[in-house]
Every structure is written in C-alpha cells, then in structure tokens.
Image (cartoon, rainbow, N blue to C red; front, top):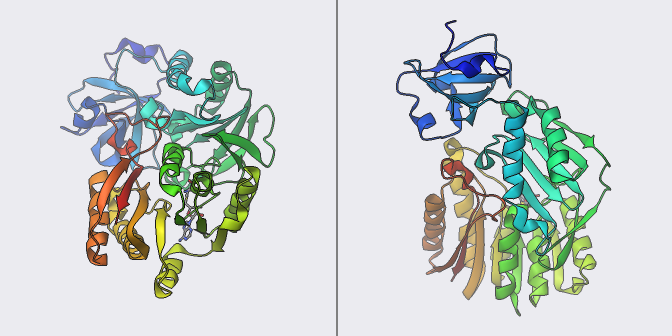
Length: 408
Ligand code: SAH
C-alpha cells in the first residue's frame, strides 16, 4: 500500500487503513462514530478484529482513526476525528478521565452510589460501558475495538477511578454481532457478593451484579422512578415489567394504596420482594404475578379491572431501525390495553428503550394507541434517560430511552 501522508502512521500501533467509497466520508465529517460496511471501499493491511486503522476518504484525505470490526455491519468505530491524534495509552487515559470527571456530581453519593461512569459512544469510547455500584465497577466490552484494549482499559479504570474491584459482564447479544463470545467474571480485585446493596433517592436496592439484567440495575430509569412519587399518593397501581421493583418501591414510598406487579422473570420478582422488605415498605399492599405482560393485560381487561396509575417499562423491542415496525406493533398493543385499564383521570408512565424507535415515532405510537382505545389523553411530561447516560449530539442513536407521562 502507499504510505499515508500523516506522520502519526509511524508513531503508533497502526496496522492498516480503510478507504471509504466516494462521498461516504460525509458521516465522518459530521463526527458520527460508526462506519458501516457499505461505506468502506477497501481495507489495506492484514487486519484483525479490534485493530486500530487510519480512515481515508476516496480522495486520500486522512479523516481520523477507528477500530476495525470485520464481523460487524458497523465495520469500524471511530476513536478520533483528528488525524494528528495517536491512539495509545495516553489517549485512553484522557478519554476515561474525561468520562469519569463528567460524573463528579455523582461522586458525593448524595442521590445514589450507583451510576454510569462510561457510556460508550457518547463518551468517545464506542462499545465501552462502565457502571459504578458502590465499591464495585461492572464493565462491558461490547465492540471489537474496546475488547482488544481490555487489559489496558482495566488497568486505567482502576488507576483513574480509584476503585480496585472490577467485574466483567460482556454477556450481551451485541457481542455476537461483533463476532465476540460472551465473557463474564472478575477482572480485578474482589469478586462481588451475590447481592450488593445500593441506594437511590433515599431507598435501598439489592442488586445482583453477576447475574442480573444489564449490569444488574436499570440505572437509566433513576430519575423516572423518582418521578412516580409525586403521582402515587392513594393510587391503585399496575407496574408492568417491574424487574426488581424499582418503580414499586418508589410508589409505595409515595403512599400508593396498592401495587400489582408483573414480570416474566421469577428471579427478578424474588429480588423485588427483597427490596420491598429492605425498605420496610408495606408488602401487604403488593401483589406479584410471574407472567407475560401481553397476556396478563388481556386478562385484566377481560375482568374489567381498573387502575389509577400504570407503568409500562418493557425491554428493548427493536435494537435497530429495521426492526422498528414489529416493535411498533408491540408498543401499540400494550399501550392500547393500558389506556383501557386506566380510569378516567388516571396516569400512564410509558417507556421505550428501543434505539430503533425515535422519540417522535414513540409519541405517534402512543397517540395511535389512545385513538384506537377510544380515549382522549394528554402528555403531562416527556422523560428520557438519566444524565449519567448522556447523548452526544453527533450520535443521535444515543437518545434511546423515551418516556411519556400521560393523563387519560
Ligand atoms: N422498570 C424496571 C426495568 C424493567 S426492564 C426498573 O426500573 O428496574 C424490563 C423487564 O421486563 C425485565 O425485568 C424482564 O424480565 C421483563 N420482561 C421482558 N419481557 C417480558 C414479557 N413479555 N412479560 C413480562 N415481563 C417481561
């Protein structure tokens, strides 16, 4: 291959280059971190998964540096848009330091001791997720790029965060898309106990860091769980997809009359009960059903049940825009049933964490559900993910959690 003009080529660990098709450098110029396979004309060098490559436009202009991922449709993820950068230990130290400094507001543990320290693309570290749970960090390496830097990132996280106990939970489906096997286990320091107690807005939660969903807790919903307190007083509540009882504990703390909880995971329901006890909240005001929400909502409708407040916080139905249509049907179904089950004046907390569904589309789906349910409803509040899950303006896909509080 011809030597790229950039002097850094010879200074760092660069093993090769990728050259884009004519016109396909546009997204890189807009500082979007993903390069899809269809944009790549060819690569130079013997490239392996995770290798650092220099990115060139079709006319030979150096555009920056990326991590190569041959198995994925996202063929490369940009480390830097500056051709003068060198992607080495100092680069990662600087990126991780910046991400951790952005969370200094959480450091005094006033609101919680469980928060996200590194949020992938939005922190300039594509595919890296680091969540802090008290004295433990839980780490996910979700792209070939960060996976190949695993040892360095582990060492730097300990150095910068001052937390020596790291547990790996690289066991998400997206690893498969990158051609990476699942991996979990202790990376450094102490192995977490089976249940780690964290606190959030004055309540305590028992979290299973090693086996729970995601890294153990849905940290992105922190502020939205807190919101329910204002609507809960005296309310008969239905919490669908309740997981370990986050919304339920806050609702009971806010004076709810009763909370009916539905989740398909019996493990999650068991931990949810533990969490109610942990906070000395009234267990006799709760009921727990291990079932499929889609089916259970129909049963409740057939029995003509009615609620003052309903929470719908389903799992991701669509990871990508291509699955949006099927996902939209799922959201419409549960929202329509929820509108029917609400009394007039009742409140709906409804969420979507599907990256493939935009906030505008989600609102349209909920509007369609209200229409088909024959209900007039208004939006009281629009909700999103907590601020430790920031959305980089150059990465709109990071705007994944959408929520609406509606009144019937
Ligand atoms: N609101 C929760 C997080 C919900 S995560 C919190 O604040 O912590 C989504 C939950 O939906 C998971 O607990 C999962 O077990 C459950 N789930 C997924 N599919 C389901 C289905 N079809 N019916 C019932 N529960 C389901």
